[in-house]
Image (cartoon, rainbow, N blue to C red; front, side):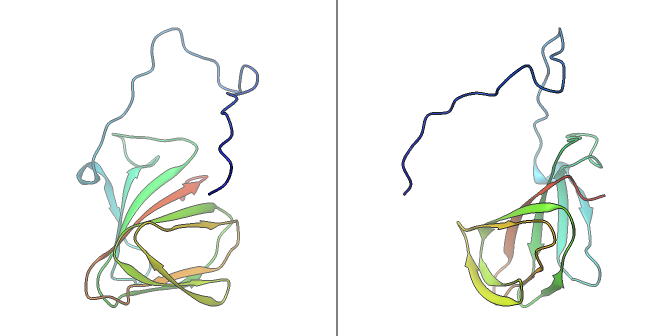
Length: 138
């Protein structure tokens, strides 16, 4: 593990003025999200924290839980949004910049803008992935 460094806080006043009244959090579950299907893939994404979800309308990023059934493939593609995949449950293979990489629960996969990526559930159980995207996908 890398050396632990102290958190130094955020510099300056920031770009968004702090409101006078306390800001309330949005507390949601996957069941509160908005389902979405990606192309012809048989997996289903649920936009949990996302501009399209009125219960947790994030402005600067999106969080989706992607449920990939056994032996289902989302073909590789790329886009300008930066993403991070966190494998919540299961295992599979991701195509990353043309290379096959085995992934499993507990792994983070950071995808810079335009990094080609796709996913295949190679197991007999559901593959569940938390995808964070900035800025959020439309």
